Length: 144
Length: 144
DNA sequence: TTTTAATCAGATAAAAATATCTGATTTAAC
DNA sequence: GTTAAATCAGATATTTTTATCTGATTAAAA
Image (tube, rainbow over all chains, first blue to last red; front, side):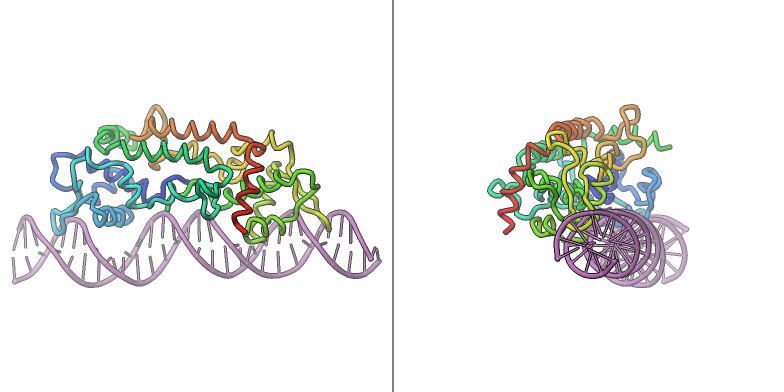
C-alpha cells in the first residue's frame, strides 16, 4: 500500500492546523485536540511531543498546561511539519527505489518525477498554516 | 517515514522495465531479474506472481520457463503497475488522513493537493513502459 | 502543603509491510 | 520415464510503523 505522508505526519498537520484555528486562547490540551480530531489521545500526545521538540509548537507543562504554536501561523509552512516528522526522503529518494539516483545516474523515471516532486515541494514550502486554519474548522464540523 | 510507492511497487516497475528491455528473448527467469536488479530472488518472485495474476506480464512454467510482457510495451502504462500492486488509495485517499474528504467536505489541503495528484495520475497514465525500457539498461549498468 | 491535571520519556504491544522458506506443480531435456 | 529447472501457493519470519501503557515530572489551584 502506497502512502504519501505517514500517519504521524497527517495527524501532526491536523493538530498544528487546529492550534492555529484556536488563536486567542493561550494553550490547548492534547485531550481537546484528540476529541476534536477524533483520534487517540495517546497517539496525538506523542506527535505533539515531537512537534514541540522540533520547535514548531511549544508546550506548557503542569495543570492548565497544553500546546500552542511556537510562532506566528504565517511563519509556519506545511513543509516544516513534513520535514520534522517524515524527513526529506520523499523529496530526495529515488521513486523506483534505485540506489544513487541522480541526474548523473538517473533512473528511468528520474526526469519526469523530479518535476512533480519539485512542484510538490514548492507548494508545501509556500503554503502557510495561516492559509488553512479556517478550513480546518469547517472540516472538523463535518466529523461531528 | 513517508513513501510514495510501496517497495513491492518500486520493484514491480523495475522488473517490468527490465522485461521490456529484453525484447526479442522469449522469457526471462526470476533469477536473472533478481541478479540484474540486485534484489532478493524470493521477493521479486512473489511480485512477479502478482503481476502475472493481474495480467501485466505472463509466465511460462517448468524448465526453461520465465516471464515476459503480456502485451506490447507501448500498451503498458506505468499506472497499470501502480494500480495492480498499490491500488488507487494514493489518488483517492485524503492527504491529511481525514475521512470522507471530497469537494463537498474538503480537508484544508484538498484543492491544492488534488491538482498535484491529478498531474501525477496523468503522467503515470500517459507514460508507457516503451518510453523507459532503454533507460533502465543504463541504470542497471550503474549498479554493477 | 497537598491534590489535581497536564506534559514528558521511555517501554511495550499490536498491526502492517517486507522478506524468506517450504513443498507442490509444471515442463524441457536426457 | 526420470531428472532438472523453473513457476506457484501458502505458511512463516522479520522489520517497521502505529498505537498504547506506565510512571515521572511539572505547575496551578485548593
